[in-house]
View 1 (cartoon, rainbow, N blue to C red):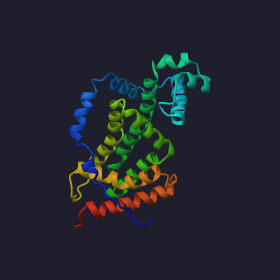
View 2 (cartoon, helix red, strand yellow):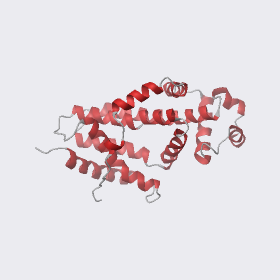
View 3 (cartoon, helix red, strand yellow):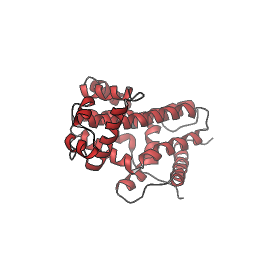
View 4 (cartoon, one colour):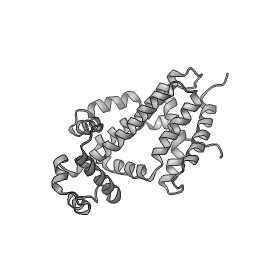
Length: 242
């Protein structure tokens, strides 16, 4: 497999961590954001019926999109009564936010578990593991569909997009920054810049190809090869050799 290249100035295209944190703090006063975060906190102990409603809603939103979905149609097609849906969620918007939150919470928990295993690994091996973990999730049809739904709804409800950014990309950056801090390699940039360039290098091209239907869903071996090639390029470009 040939080396993977990316010419994206990812750092310049994204806000700094301080600015993002400030916006996140401001958004936290918004009722929707507070609700989304509350749902994320209680995902560890879901109620069975609520979980069933979320399973049905996830499949329905993925098939019909947010604008094309309705609670009435969702209930009719799934066999779940409207009363069961409204028992947990007062509107389509609230149900959609809960669906997104569950997906994000699962991804966030995956990154948290991964972070705890990286400190004892060599830097290259740890970066390959991170790349594989991110790409195993991000390149699936399901994840691509969910991202599109988030981006669509974020135009009307910015706090949904902000929460996605904080618990998704921003969480991955934090895991990488912590890893770079633990390893005393001779880096060419600050850890915050390095983390953004790393995600851009491993994900930008393959995600674009997936979104444009140029590349089918990669299998485990293909993800592994892509991760190893990307990490090799990253080490050559951003880590000084002594």
